Image (cartoon, rainbow, N blue to C red; front, side, top):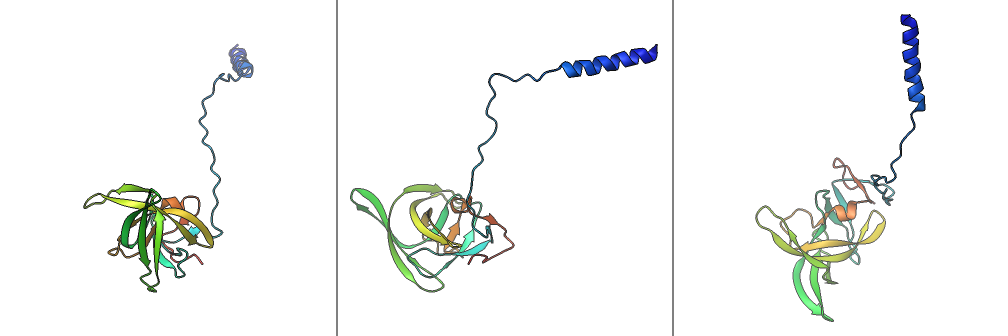
Length: 176
């Protein structure tokens, strides 16, 4: 008798499981995030320090790769604001510390942003620069400031790195 009851309960269990149907709600919230297709450099692993070019300048700049920085930054000299055709512009000089190559740039001001610093917050202008990095040439925003006290003249932030490179801090100078 025990065996029969045991068999009946197994039958009931399997029978109930077989009769269950999946209930699909009429409205399903979109929880799947869109997949972003990214273009990476052929050799997409770069190091903590890499060389970049700022055309039309011919010599490369040693640049600190900084995944913690939102926007890339550039050391400039003689920063001056002026107006052209009713719009705000900036003029500045870049001198490559390694080669002494010098170039004067005049760029439209994209905007000013507040930079949070340990000592004090400061406002910096943002300009769009042409950048050559690892065989790819593109335009990117840079904050500009007189950064002569820093070891590297350029700091490459997430606005350039995102979708272009993976950073391995144990490497340096991987780009051609």
